[in-house]
Image (cartoon, rainbow, N blue to C red):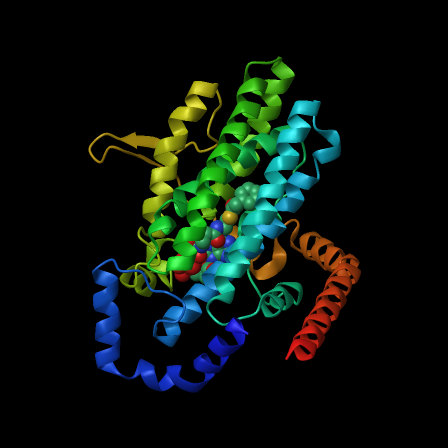
Length: 335
Ligand code: FAQ
């Protein structure tokens, strides 16, 4: 019902309202004063669309992101590692559902968003289109992928849109635990046998560059950044966050005794930052256009899971309808 009424509002008014400079100025003032925008507040259509796009992509990423890790659940090296991994994957499912709910406050339904994903019309993070070939990859996902995710998501706790900002607080707390469990896996491997160290090094070589791509294109090529920064959806640019991630991660890799696979990596003492070699943007764009190593596999698995869950959705709907009918009958009898 709530979502329905927002859908009607969206269809009826936004295009005209977007032209209203006074309303826009008022909206921008509110943003500049760091006052949160809430679901029933007026907002420009482009603000709503940007949020729906970003939050839904984020939700899809959490859900698809369960797959590469799920691949190792039956092969975790100990019961403790298996329990940790199971808990982490369940957290990701929770994040996805939380984020779909945040998106729903903007007037789209979860069904609509899931349909877009299943039809291949929605993006999700490029990183989840890479395979997990060894146990060390699970460590890399925690250490690097969650590490990159936190770097990007901590500022989202201050996003101007209230429901997204609040959702991010819980998500970030859990991602921080995920990052530590990943680092712990990698640390254990690095303190192990030469074969274990080699496994960690091999995994780092495969995950490093895709992790840098997670932050999105360079600022000059980032089509949404200007508006998103003006509206305080994003607080830092893609390149700024990528640099923060590299600055935080290079010393950790050194501590672990791992070599970052970048011959051009150097410390710029004047700027006080690590500088990487060039990122292969052809690879990034191929992946986000559906041609990464695992895109087809990931979508096929998601479609299969959705189909297998059909009976649960139908049973839940039938149950809810029966209870609603019984409640309505009881109310009618009492009246
Ligand atoms: N992958 O103009 P910009 C996680 C697209 S959660 C795919 O710079 P924007 C948890 C972008 O959508 C990871 N597409 O875009 C976990 C746009 O295309 P569009 C997900 C990408 O939105 C851990 C186009 O390129 N996190 O890891 C990517 O201003 C472990 C132009 O780009 C979030 O979603 C990419 N990497 O900035 C789960 C955080 N980068 O939509 C399981 C929220 C860019 O016009 C295991 N999102 N594109 O067709 C954001 O902060 C932003 O959306 C960015 C991109 C920074 C990702």
